[in-house]
Image 1 (cartoon, rainbow, N blue to C red):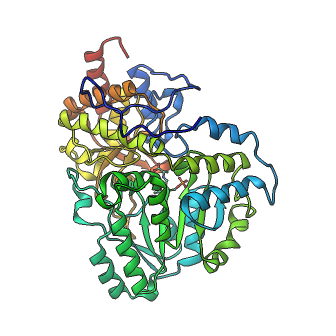
Image 2 (image 1 turned 90 degrees about the vertical axis):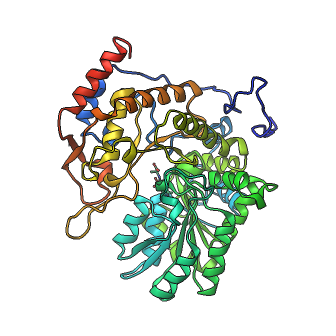
Image 3 (image 1 turned 90 degrees about the horizontal axis):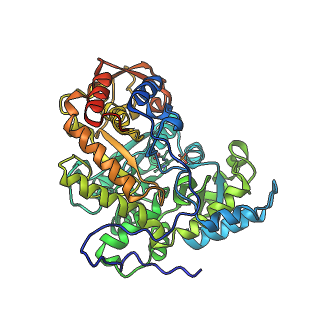
Amino acid sequence: MEKISNNRTVKFFNGKQIPLEMHKVRIVQSLNLVPVEQRLEAVKAAGYNSFLLSTKDIFLDMLTDSGTNAMSDKQLSTMFVADDAYAGSVSFSRFEKSVQEVLGKKYILPVHQGRAAENIISKAYISEGSVIPMNYHFTTTRAHIELNGGSILELYTPEAMKIDSSHPFKGNIDTERLEKTIQDVKPENIPFIRMEASTNLIGGQPFSLSNLKEVRRIADKYNLIIVLDASLIGENAYFILKREAACGKETIGSILLKMCELCDIVYFSGRKVSSAKGGAICTNSPDIYTRMKHLVPLYEGFLTYGGISVREIEAMAQGLTETLEEDVVGQSPMFIEYMINELVKLGIPVVTPGGALGSHIDATQFLPHLPQSEYIAASLVSAFYIASGVRGMERGTMSSTRDEDGNEIYADLELMRLALPRRVFTLSQVEYTIDRLNWLYKNRELIGGLRFVEEPPVLRFFTGRLEAVSDWPERLAEAYRKDFGDTL
Ligand code: F0G
């Protein structure tokens, strides 16, 4: 069926402003909402770490959009025609063609997921003392840079850290600070400048095309290369289309090409951008390609599959092509915007304006009585799970790390992320989430802190275990039972 993009034109006669789904549901998965007593037991057994919960105890899984976006019928159908060959698979040729069409890059190195791209780029470019200026870090990116002896410098603008803002591009890099940093650190110590599309950890906030152009101008002046983390590039292009006046007449496709053309290396998590599983590093430079090529068979797999199943390569190829559709890349941002507007009306502190990936609740304002040392955002995630069965993700100090002396490096922001993967949830499920958040906000003084009982040295938020500092989870569950009685 020919696809016509509608989401700009649909208006409700009754004046309501709600996002309208431009897809229908054809395959469903049943959900389970377990009673609050079971949620309390489950969160304790998971060490108050939402990564360690089992989906049998989860109602709405808003942990992430990684590998959880809904797939299209066309994606599913391409998986059946995948060419299962170790080398020279035509499925990979189709993927190459799709990357060329959507991102405009000729040389493609497949990797099993986004962080594998970060491993390879870091191994090829970073050495002891390297400094990487960037708009903001992502957890796995930072870990790979530091493991290879480098360090990061985050050059975000003051607007980026404001929870309540109307700035359309909080993901911009501060270009004045960038140039000054390059002069101070010296270009020879900077293997590349990194830009992250829809900057994940500050609330999925995009950068503008004009900001990226300015980064290119500075990079050229000092003969530096730019690496673009394109895991959330589709949504960033959507925001450029909607929010950057100079680009209002463009298409998602033309913006994607312009963004990628300004960057020397483009890498992505295919789990996000292409609603499948996998990833890739792309470039138009034969030198850059050659510098990393040999690392792919060593860490990932042969050059035409990179550790990804060929079925997923087909799904990535098709999924990437669908990134050109405004209905696809705009769906999650539109739901997020709806949710955020409702939360603002209820007085619940949330990052504005809405960005990509999910709604980001400001745990610092939600729980002003908790000290940062008690993992405010993680406490809020656990409390919200008890109050709703909805699984969110901690994006705060628990996701940070310690310095060499073992002191906490406190996160700039303490956020609870509620991911809205593309085309997964219905509006009534979003309404339920808003309702339970409202209840929790009214009962927020019941929520207490957490402390680690098992703390891994790297990326501790994935597998670390915590305990409650008091019996607050029991008291919260009791208050819930009082208000909701026998209902779930
Ligand atoms: N870069 C960004 C901006 C990401 O958001 C992610 C993953 C990665 C790199 C790593 O990709 O997971 O395929 O290895 N983000 C997920 C999330 C995990 O939940 O935000 P990966």
